[in-house]
View 1 (cartoon, rainbow, N blue to C red):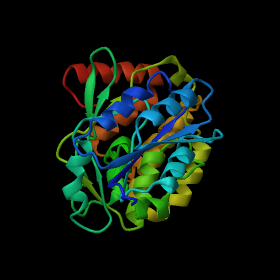
View 2 (cartoon, helix red, strand yellow; view 1 turned 135 degrees about the vertical axis):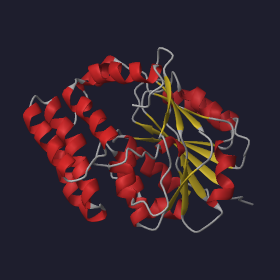
View 3 (cartoon, rainbow, N blue to C red; view 1 turned 45 degrees about the vertical axis):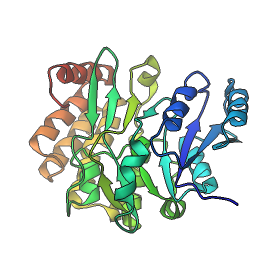
View 4 (cartoon, one colour; view 1 turned 30 degrees about the horizontal axis):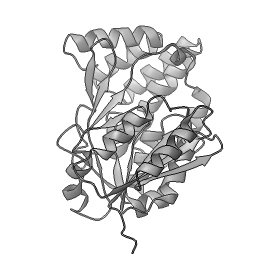
Length: 306
């Protein structure tokens, strides 16, 4: 007889044969063992397929799906649609759960309808720099748009656990390519989800610098298109926060710092930032990605939370 797992852990993978075993082991070592793992191979060209076929023979709770390349959001959606669990959790192939991740969430998930849990992540930045994100959870009666977009809140995808029925009705936007975590969390709440941050950090996020990030820049026009679609779900302050940070940063990255700073100061006047956030965003817009990364790592080593 088929027994429904409590959790379906969805792991998108693209050319991750060199690191996915570590991620899988972190799931298999969970203190809560009622789960299935769904690895969605997004068109890998390395040895991922052969590796996964061998692993599936050894672990009956492990499922493997291969699809043509379509991006991480499409892979997550494939996993969501295939999931049999009561709840869906997400993990990236180069990150790991801490052993109590699933168990910690259970009592909170069962506390109400459409409760969605998330937790802080330990962000490994390299060179001995580790930080916790987010710095706090969403507050009672705090608009989710302001928590995510104005107040530097964060719902890390690798800690998010949600009812399967809600996940299957919302799904990820497969056309964004950036900001998937904030967009998905915002739409979860719009569709009735209740975000609850757990007491302890429950995953480790590998966020070490590599040179390929230099070519990763924000397209301000596409982000503005998203903002105009999503603004009906935002407060006025949250709307201006996006204009004054990510869209402003996109213009600055593409050489138009004057346009970027103009949007930044407009957001400041319209309540998009508090003083601390305003200072941080000013440096993000004014410095290159590499320069800001070094600056924020330096602050983290001094004990600040950039």
